[in-house]
Image (cartoon, rainbow, N blue to C red):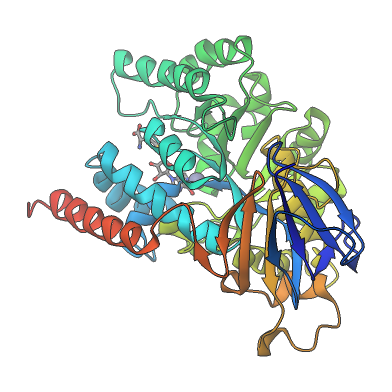
Length: 434
Ligand SMILES: N[C@@H](CCSC[C@H]1O[C@@H](n2cnc3c(=O)[nH]cnc32)[C@H](O)[C@@H]1O)C(=O)O
Ligand SMILES: [Zn+2]
């Protein structure tokens, strides 16, 4: 057997206890073969986890990975103005090459910070899949359809493309890519189009991902026009269900929370983006109490401004307390569970846990650091003190993607340089200087 042993460290178990153990990985199947007592087995290749904590690779349940090119380009505006005045004009100039360069940069950033799977919404998705293929991570991809501002033909073509891309790319990158049908949001895709295309997506068996209840400005027009809350409207359109997860879910009332729970619809919670755009804050404790599956997402790097899931976890725990007015709300265990099992559930992955039979998607966090001393409680550290830069090794599908902080499948310096060039030329085109 072609095996890999992650040896000498402590291991975070599915019940969030920590024990000294070695993790044996079957590289052929890409699964965890076993979690064994320290020093009891040998393997062809070893990854040194001493003074480290072996955790499941983290799941970023909502992002726009190629938006790394727009990191720091437009800050300090609310969602509508930010999208309409800054982001969409620049995105109109994005080429497929730009998107691939931005995706590589974002994936390198995620590998460095222990994220092994992400859910993405964008376009030129085949090129994002190429980057995923080369980098060795997992991704749930899709072409995001918008109909506002488009003529009927272009609008229908965009939605059809969302279905076609989801069918074509499912299973790409040796099965590490899966897909979703993606209407951008309930206000940027018109009702007639949703009534026509959601049944087609359902018929094709496609999971669905869209932005929902992100800002008040998005809720009010729906209530005015349809006489229903956004998620009631979404339910009427057959958009909710076990294989649907929405991004944000900030402005949800009690009936909508019950609807999410009853239909099995998940929520990708994106606290940093919600804070930065002053969108509001999702009632995470109430969602969890109702039994809704909540994962953690960074959203794009232009509204965050990084793709570090540890940062997001800390934000989720902090803001979850503020919004609940309760320091006991959204405790450390909850956010660690959300970024591992929660995100894995939304992405429909057999991972998010270090256990025999699960995907061999792992990160090893270095505990030898001043800001992680003393180590009273590793789960507390994961929630409140670990940074992405504390990740020493990253493994996905049984392959080592980062060893001793060196990214292996991609040349990090070249990726950064290429992304910088694409970003510079993109902005020059968008601002009319090129
Ligand atoms: N703009 C394209 C396709 C949309 S891709 C997904 C879009 O989501 C946008 N986006 C990024 N973050 C957010 C967010 O928080 N809420 C809503 N949209 C966002 C992103 O900039 C991108 O335009 C078109 O007109 O067809
Ligand atoms: Zn988004």
